[in-house]
Image 1 (spheres, rainbow, N blue to C red):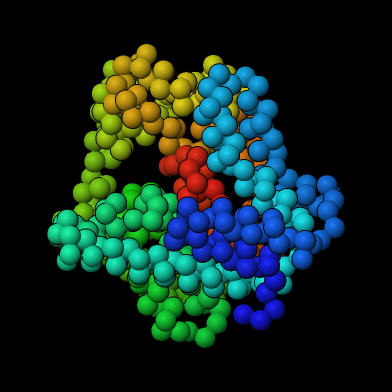
Image 2: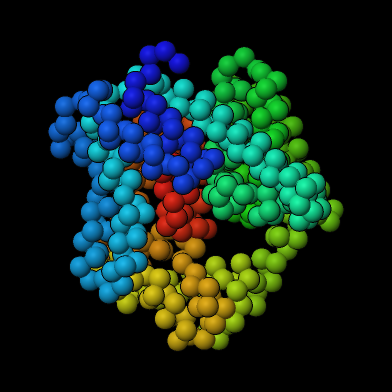
Length: 382
């Protein structure tokens, strides 16, 4: 639209491609860097190390320092490249003038999610009708439905999308488009069958609605919503369905868990194994960690020594970003990562910004189940 400068367009391009085509993201950064002179702010270290930006920069500097005791430098350099935006985004934001509003960025984020759904449904129809790869039912479920990124990451952004729509629904004039979008985003979360995504959705969406209703003193509606939630969960438990089958394996995995001589690579068991192994590796290197490029090797070797052949073969990471950072960079890295969240939560509470608070909470909960910022899909939007 009129009034947007080169920095605005670069940011919008990065935002859209972070959802629909990760390989195109670097083009946005290149364009931003080349065009920044047209809409440039005067740079100062104070500006760069202000607010939440300083913790992203510190995290990246710790990754650089962690290369000093890294043996696997090739993997280490790949991690530095992988997280370069932790340094680049704060730097570019400190140098850039913007005319775009937060509301416009949010609208583009929702638009990007809509595009991703259209693309995913389109791919499913094409593969089903023209390629006969699977039935329509199979194509619409599980990882088959999330073609643009890993389903756990996709679910997180869909949950954030649902929160944005609900926030808009409670604030502004009610729109039938918001109701439709909320339904489609919610359905897509359940279609992916990502356990963490479904669980986080069932935690955050009811909490958001109840909080909004409490603020409005609509206590009868709270009762209705609670009844609807309990009824929905009961229905999922009682009626045979793919979501139920995904969660049924969790109690068995926990009950029969053994931390050593375990050949399993099943998703629930592998998480428990990787959490246990990560804690043990961290205990050996509590202050410095094993180094920027050695966490993958250290975890794999430890699992081999334990006889956990399944997770060792797949070279799984910690499946928890906080544990992954603790193994990689020790306590200092963990503190830097936590300060990103604490600074964000403080900002949200001080500004009474419910949208920021719940968005951060969605990321925080995902960090408990995935090494979220170890792949490109999780870094830019975080």
